[in-house]
Structures are given as C-alpha cells and as structure tokens.
Length: 358
Length: 272
Image (cartoon, rainbow over all chains, first blue to last red; front, side, top):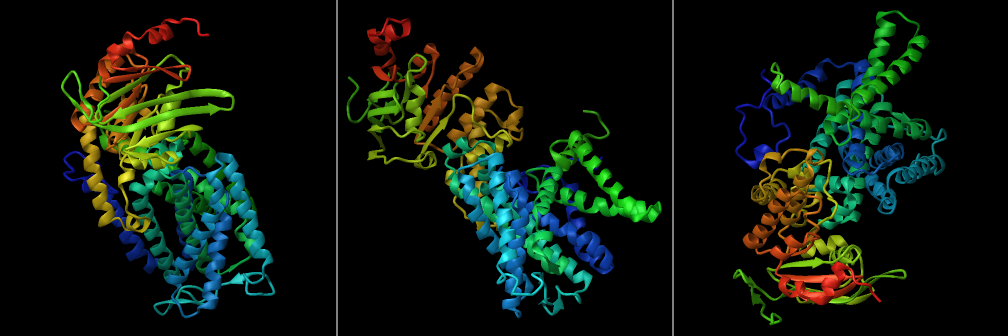
C-alpha cells in the first residue's frame, strides 16, 4: 500500500545511492532514531538498561564489526572475544592513566588500539583462508586472554586480577561506575551504535566495501582489477577490530563495570557474536542489529513470559529458554539460511507489491 | 610489410599506432614442463590482436604472463616503452591492463552495477576516513565514477539488469558484465580470454559486435584468445599462432591462413 516506490523517482546518482531509497523506510529510520534519542532516555530505568538496551546496543556494535570482516570481506574470525578484551583493557588502562580525559576519547582510542592489534593478527589471512584462518584467529583469542590474565601490568597489579571501571564522566555526567544513571549509559552507547552503523554503511557502500566484497567473492578476480589483497584484507581487519574494540570497551566500562577476562571475553563470546552475525545475516548492517536483538532480547523475553506470566520455576525456565532459543535458531536458519536480514528483504519485496500477487 | 615503426592502416581504414606491448623472448617453465618457449611478439595501439592455437598451446599462459599471474623465467615484457619489472597482478591492473577470464570471474554476491563499479577501483583514490564520512569528497567521487560506469552499462546494453545480483544472470550476460567491468577501467590494453567460449551463434555475434564497437568507439587495444576460427579471422587485425609453446605463425589473418605450419598444427601432422 504505502510501502511502494512507484512515483518515487530518482533523478540523481546521489538519490539512487542513498541508504533508504524508499520513502517509507526513510521515515521509519528517522522515527526509530527520534524514539531512541528523544523518548527512551526519559523512560529508561536500571532494569531495562542492564537487561535489554545496553547489551543489545553493545553487541550490535560488535556484530557490525565482525560483519565487516566475515560478512563483507569473507575472512572468518573466531578472535572477537579476544579483541573485545583488548578494547576493554585498553580502555581500562587509559581511564586509570588519564582520569581527566573524557570517556568518549578513551573509548575511541581503545578502538584504535584494538584496530592495531587486529591488523597484527590479521596478517596470517594473507596466506590462509577459510576454516584455517578461523583456527589462526582462535590463536589470537587464546593468546590475548592468556596475556591479560598473566601480565599484571594490564590490570594495574590488582590482587583479584580483575579490572573494574572507576567513575568517569562526559560533560559532567557520570558514564561509568556504580553511580552512573541509566539514561546516561544508554545514551552514551546509543551514540556509538549510531555512529558505528553510519560509518559501517558509508564504508560498505563505497569503494572500500567493493574492495572487501571483491576479495570475499573471488580474490583472484579482485587482484586482476587492481585490488591489493594486502591492504584490502588488513583494512577490513582494522575497521572490524576498531568496532569490536569499542564494543569491548563499552561492555567493560559501561555495562559490566568489572571484568574477569577469561569469564567475560572467552571463546564463548567469540561464538556468540559470530552467531549473531550468521543469524542476522552476513553482509548486512541491519542483520547485525537483528542478530544482536535475537540473541540478546529473546532470552529476556522468554524469561519474562515463562517466569513472569506463566509462573514457572526459575531454573526450569532457564533450561527451557536454552531449548527454545536453540530450536528457533535452527528454525530460522532452515527457513532462511541467509539470516534475518534476508527474511526482512524478502518481506519487503512482497510488501512492495501487496496486495497484488505480481 | 607492416613492421613500420609508426604503425599501419588496416583494410577497413583504421589507423594502428605504435607498439604498446612487446614480449621479447618469453620462456615460461613449470618445473620440467615448458609452457612457452622463446616467444616474441608485439601488440600495437588500437589493434585487435588474436592469439590462437590448439589446446595446450600455451595461449592462456601467455595471457597470464601479460597480466602478471606468471613471471617468465626468461625474456622481457615491455609496456608502453618501458621494461616491466616482475609485478603482482594488481600492479599490472593499475598500469592499465584489464582482462576477462575464460571461465567467468565475476563477484557473484554483488549486483551488476557493483561489479562494474569494481572496475573503477583503480581510479578511486579517497582514503578510509574520507569514505567513512562519505558526504563530500567520497560521495562526489562515487557519483563521478558511477557516471563512467553507467556509460559503459549503456554501451553494452545491460541497463535493465543493473541492480540484479550477478548470480542470477545467464551465461551470455555474465560474459558481457565481465567485459563491462574490464572496459570501465579505461584500460590501455584489454585482454580477453576466450570471450565467446560456450556461446551460441547469436551470443557470439553480439559479443563480436561489442568487441568491434569497443575498439572502434574507445580506440581500445585488444588482445584476445579465441577458438572459433571464423570469429578470429573476421575480428582481428593480426594473429599470433602458438603450438606446443612455440610461435608458429604471426601476421594478418590471410597470411596466417596460408601458413603451412599453421595448417599442419590444426590438421594434425605428426610432430618430431
């Protein structure tokens, strides 16, 4: 009905290349942004922030980062947890070393440091591909976690071996630490999510994204049209790790507040983010959000329904939660192997014509 | 004779310029196998140069030497008056040599437009940070290159499939998209590896027309490998004939056709 491009003519290449070519999509995007920035901060409380919004937003950043590497450039990585740990520890060291600097700067710098580490561990990708590269990045995962466990300089020689975020502010409002208000933490993450998504979209729709996708689809052909595989792959590792590092920094500083590296940034975190990317849709920014939402929100929703509405025992509900989420993952992947983003795309194709069959 | 320094005039009146690419005594070995044995030939500006020969003659190896996949053990490659040091394929591409493949090498996950736009990558120079911001230089560059891409898309008559993913296209169209991708780079030398392999007569005619048009319209120098003799003889200005890694003939289609060695190679006389 109103979801249609008929009559919505594009007369310039700029119009044709925009992110949301259909008017309705564009409005929906603005409305989502307006709600996220203008309404939710006033309604949010600690429960909603900690159970729903913060993990969703932070995982979305990590998923966007990993999607650039796996979905756009075709380099499989199992080192996400390790790279998030780099972001977290870099942020921690910066926060403690320069207490007066704004958190914004710390998080961005943490992303930058992670990007450098990512490039270093991306070097094997020049020689090895596919599953073998996944195994090589697994080495990064284990090495980095081991490093942060063993070298006490990274956790400032604290007795527990943990790192915990001291209170830091942006423009006078506490963002980290126990006193930080929920809305401030939420807005802080939201800004990073929005910026990450826009930057990722800008990179993937232009020359950079085409280089990555060319490498992903056929590296020999990419080389023959003038793509340097070295710079293309390493830039994908850098950009991807940058976002993953930001996610790690936020995860530690804003969301958890205190981190024990093996527990929080272990191999299961790498898999979790990889599953988000696969379920959400490889090579899609929207898919990163969808995948993060699926794996973060669904368990919360199920818990609320099973325990809150139906009055089940908590442990029983927790077990059923695993089974239901697992079942749904299988179901979704059978229905659409290309992820939620593809499902969404197909739905939109149908909606364009609705209510007519052709 | 046509070996004048300044080039020559073809039968249909096109002006052929000086030497663009010269292969001097190229020898390529894979272990004990000699794929190319001491071959020399040149490609002149604006001409359509064919490389023909029976299966396993070393034609594709020759193209791979030109495009930088193989580094010959002996011999020199001269491009636009300069001796070319050993190069990676992407460096060769940046020098202005584009190619297509025998079995199509398109990016299946991308649309036709994106595939063609990848051909412009060597001309797109904005950095990572400029592209991340997008508005401004990156967008301007995108539009500028999009215009070039659209011109080629128009030229090869693939406007209607612009936004179709390449994986969904039939074979003949894929070949055309691949040609578009190579052409949009505005190459100084265009290499076509069996552009008509596996096509029906109609598609072959289309492709031949496009090759002639490309040469005519843009003045692109083209070197092609092809098995269809009729096509080769009609299209090309000069032909190199290879057999078992050796050059057995070089000249206009008519000269080559009457060459006894070539006839022997094609009709199968015992080699000793």
